[in-house]
Length: 415
Image (cartoon, rainbow, N blue to C red; front, side, top):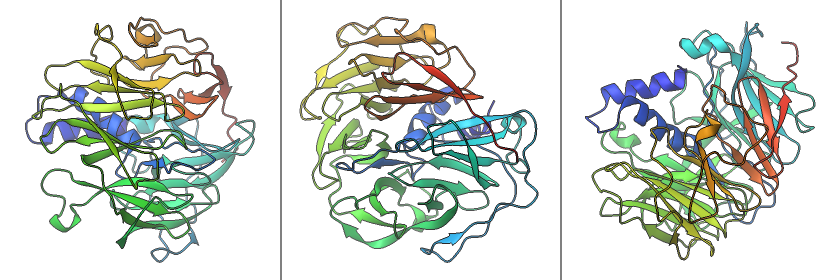
């Protein structure tokens, strides 16, 4: 059990009554968490390079000190944190081009509080051939939401406090909501889904407000035109694929909104099959933002529903009319391979239960080679056309097409 899993188990036992089991809460929370983390990101459409946000659960000790809000200042490594044996990757972060990042931490931190556990942010500028330490200390919720940007939460700070680095994780500035609106996501920035309940001390239902973040200043301003749904997730998609946002319609049913102009205008699809009392979750698989699949995991009754668009979200058709993909309590992770094969990771760590199809009928196992069953809940990232990434606890895996994979061990520098 990971520390992240423990957090969701705690949420499942202390939150108001729910039909979801602790395991289902974990699966659903991971789906939202990997794309959002309240600050998880989707890069603005029209950018020319890609970084995809991914959740990282890590351990460490001590809280580094911040500089003045909105100013760039070095954050020194926490004292007394050195590398120890039996460490591994806690989650992947992919950067643009040949720039990659991973969070490296002791395995034993998975079974204890992160407090007192060292963590290391490692970076590579040559596609994983060599690695250097970029930060040493307690860091979690690592993501890379836009070209040249690394985003992180430092332990000891509020869950919504994030810091951004534009030099590969060497120095950091605070990301902060500010007054005012923007018409589009700033150039080089990203869209975030931020909890707007601060004035109510986070009481009541979660309420997201979409903001555009400027990485140069760290300022996050509300997008002037919000979608017709109530957002709760900014879904992770490649740069140039547009902004894809999950949420609920005014009647409580599950909805999906997409913008191809940086948030100026939106198209919305409401899934009538969802139950307003338990709408479920939605995920999206796309490479170019034109051809895309929406995977809907409904609450009650438990079902997996799939839809396909070939015009960037303007119109949708049913992709699995015979319901050949079964429901599993794992939060149906999904991606689109280069040849158009739609892959559903029904059980993340068992390749035999990955389904694949091109609309119509899905079958297992998916035609994936070079990966093995492993312990871990890490998603497959589509960082750009012809660039896919995932990992296990000790290595990254890269693929040019999403179907044929090559293992890439991480050569960890001395620490």
